[in-house]
Length: 407
Image (cartoon, rainbow, N blue to C red; front, top):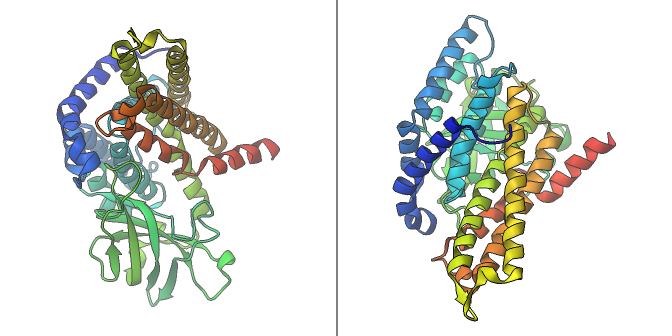
């Protein structure tokens, strides 16, 4: 793929109009107030029929699964072809367009549908999928994927303290999670913990449970204050003797490969960063070019100064590279192949660093104005930083890439 098709451009134009009409006027409330993003996201899904289409596709696949004809999911089943490539492109376009104005909304949406519903689709029983997935696909219910703890960030499994203890026919869950996207408002939570059988922590199995808001012993904190991604509510979860039946254990077995499943989730999360970074870089470049044309200093538009031109040229190079990363993902989908974890890590490392560098240069180009909340580059700079942290820090990406080379 070397460019967007005319159909893609038309879809992009429609998505952009919706965002400019429905989201841009609410940016102050979403980014600097306490307005959750879910209502406007639901409206976007409904306007373009995305939620109902995904739900219908899933329910159709679920009926096939019940007949023993495959596994219910929203994936292309690895067959590839033009339809798979087009589907991937259609997934990318809303991400890119939303990130031009509110990357936090992409995170809130992606965690609910991509990570939470995705985890249940990959590892749940047919009954669990039917019970929890459909309302997540339309955002009727908000999802959260809870793995990070106060003492376990990059070492998510090794330092994990949250536990499940067998209790009769079910389990008792204890522990706490932090930095959980959608945590304050989540209706459905995939809670990842270790099975405590009295054995050493490093020998314990990793289990995942599906929890519902309001369960006795489950406390969801108010939104945490943070540097960026203000349109993506982040919170803490506290579990004290939360009793669950085996029907809430993902897969209803203790022998699922939870670690490899989490790696698949990380791969999907890291893959999406290229599209997010592209949206941020596109908007920073657009704002910077306009400012360079109209801001006059020393009697000339600042765009006539070579140092400003250098900044703009580097931004355009980053934009082109990121767009090519996105195009490669679309082509791979057409070929029936997904990125490996190392490939996803390499793409995320570059994309996150490129977005941060471009956003910082945009602030610098705007000077004092760039430091003010009135000018959007300030927000985009704060939002870009998290791309180097969540889904695995830059340092973890380097380690993953190097391990794959040295294996």
